[in-house]
Image (cartoon, rainbow, N blue to C red; front, side, top):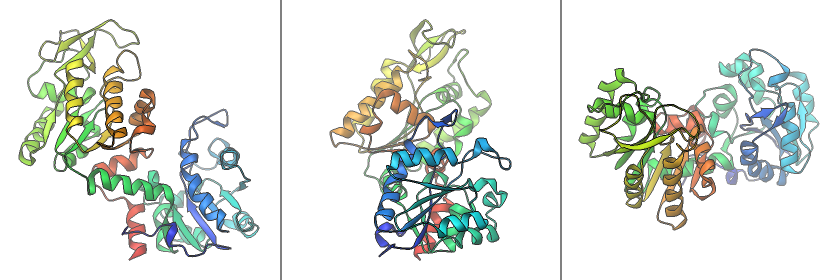
Length: 400
């Protein structure tokens, strides 16, 4: 049984004002949404509640506003949401106060209303009790369907859950179920793939994972720091040489916990960082002084594939190389497609997340084949680091 309540625990929302925290912080260009993924993720919750006669009041943030401004208004998002939902979405120019109250009072059963950017009020990010109470006065129930904002202790993500009967929306429920399969109650062997540019941004992540997974694949620019720490000359490759002691500490911790560390044994090496740059495959102990490792090499991909073959659970965060430019996307694409093949065959539970990771899996054309791909960047990373997420903890407390 889940340690939080879900929509299934709401006996009858008909006529109730349901405050639903969603993530509509979507990319836009000239006022139009360019990627509706996050909008699509909240549609099941909206349809469930509206279909049962609930009066659905959506709370969301957009951007990082420093006060009110048209560029950070959610008004254009209401139109995009209405289009994806296939039914009207009303909009109110504030999330508290008389305008918000009139809009909520006028909402019919089954109606959907989007309130203006909660971050137009600095009290939102300060989790101000009075502001949270103002929000709560607009609703009878609270649903959090924004896992991607759950690592923030804001009024609309944490404060409300302590003032109204609180429930997890469908996306939040699915996300937490997938993450539980990934690390909290996984089927072993568990392998984690961690890539990206810098060790400095993922120290907590690596230190948490070596205590939880059976194998840890380290790729991307951060692998160079580990290779340097082990005495390899990585030429002009991206490398945080001052973090060599940290890398050695993580390697030592892995020995203590029995976690196998898999580092590249070869790489695609070029003398310049640009699309189509001339490159050659070099062993990691033969990197030329003017060379840059921009992707893992074929033998390294074989190692990663072999580890995936022996795993029952995969957690992935970060690309194995500079996947944004060809041909240095090859290692990430090949490993991702292999993981997808194992997942389709029913041999692997695969959970991935983080901005670059989602982009890389989309680039490889395999996002739909993974068990779960999280669009929650910061929240997903903090979960991987083993940190409690205030928005989730508040839902757990609400059930208790």
